[in-house]
Length: 149
Image (tube, rainbow, N blue to C red; front, side, top):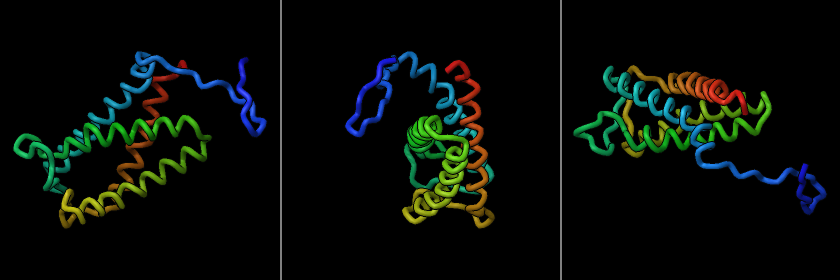
């Protein structure tokens, strides 16, 4: 095995470049799932008037924020999956809990900036549990679609 000597005496394998088709095959299914779940959940909750997006791209066409659902959420999921691959079991639990706790905080800031509004019936703890399930399911799906790696 080829190793590269680092300055502190660590022997690490060389960084292996992955081809674009390989990266697409590895990450595209989980990113598409994240987009579909995000879109479906936003359509459901907006339809039930539990929350809304006062400022969003193409408001006359979309009732949800397509910028977050089609760009922000996939980028978040991509970074999330890449980090989850690097940690042990307890690290995975920590990442899922941390992100699930962070999302209601981001929601709150979005509300302060007028990007997001909840009905009086909504509680931010719903977002914590929802993202806990979402992130757990997303990584499980990633593992199922990448068993050979």
